[in-house]
Length: 114
Image (cartoon, one colour):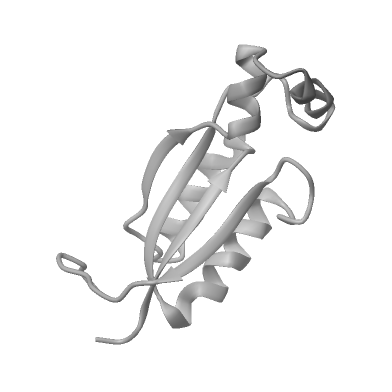
């Protein structure tokens, strides 16, 4: 089996999710799992447990209650294509409050359909 990666996207721009999934499908990128998620700063801010979090309020989209975390197993050679699709839909991930994307190697997998 060729090398595969676990690609993880924490998508803060949840309004872009449907368009992103449709574009994945049109480009034959399939097999994503999507879960609701929330970052630590947002969780603490919502509980008002730390005064220090108040300074983070200006950095966060206060209308967004949660993010979507997308897990995908992709062949190593498709990673750049998936990154390009993501940034084409959501914009540069270097912009604040857009999301975070990373991969990690998979050293064991069962049930993966190529």
